[in-house]
Image (cartoon, rainbow, N blue to C red; front, top):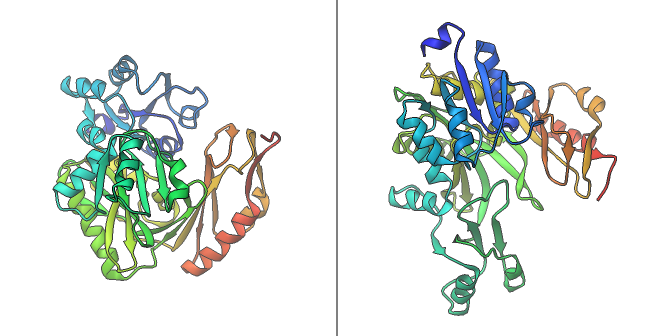
Length: 388
C-alpha cells in the first residue's frame, strides 16, 4: 500500500478493546496512524490511538462516517453494522476481512451450515427457533442429554451458550434461535490461527491448547505448543488453511477445535480477527498475531510463525464477587519471576470474570512455563476496593 511507504496510512479499527490496543501497538512500529471507533471514551485502544471517534459500531451512520476518514478498515469484533460496511466497500474502501465473512460469522447457525455444506469436520447439530421447540424435541425423544445449545446471534466470551447435561439443567435453556449439538466427549480444546494476504499467501501459527475456566466458560490458560500428536497438529493446520482459502478471506482467522477421546477433530467456531488464543505470540513466536494481521491486510509478505520459546498464557480475569475501580494485587511478586510478561489492558472498572489483562510466561520447556504460570495465578489477582 503506497501510503505506508510515505508514513501517511490511516488504519481504521472498529471497536476499541484490548485486541485493538495491541494491534495499535504493533502498527505504531510502522508509523501507521490509527483511528478507533467505540462508544466508550475510556476504552483500551482509545487511550493510545492517533484519533478516537466516539460512536456505536451498530449504528449505520457512525460506521459509515468513520469509514470515510480512513484508507483501510479492519475490526476487533464481529458484531458490527454490516450494511454500512457493504456501502463503504461499494465506494472503494478496502475492508478486511470482507463484510460477507463478518455477516456469516455473526450467526453461529449460518457458520455451522457453512462447515457442513463445505465438508469441514464439525459436530452434528440441529436448528431450533425457540426454547419451547427444544423442550418438545426432548419430550419426543428426538433430542437426548447431554447437549449444548448455542445462541445463533450475539453470543460472545462464553455468553449465549448453555450446557445441558440432564433435566436439572433445563432452566439454563436460552429462548432464542439457536443450534443444538450433542455434547462432544472432549479430550482437549485447541486453537489454530491462520493468516492469508491479498495475493493468497497462507501461514499458520502452531496449534495451542486451551484450558477453560468452568464457571465463566472463558479461556483460563493457554499452552504453546499444544500437547497433541504431530499428526493432529498438522491436520488442524491443514483444516485451517483450507477454511481460510474456502472463504477467500484476507486477514487473520482463529479456529477453535474440539479433539475428542477418539482423536477426532471438530471445528467448534471461528473468529475473523486477532484472538485471545494468540496473545502469547507477542513474546513466543517470531511474528506476533498482530503484526501478521497487519501484514495480511496490507498485502505484505507474511512473517515467520516459528516458536522462539514454549509459552503458557494466563488470562487475568476480574475476581468473582468484586466490582468497581480496578486494583491489581501481586504485580511486584509476579514480575520477579523470570520469563513473566504482564499485559494490563487499561480497563478502569473490574467485575467478575471480566478480561482485564493477560500474562505470558516463556521458558525453555512447557513444563517450566506451566509451573511458573501456576505461581502467577496464585500471586496476581484483579480486585477492587468495592465489593458486590
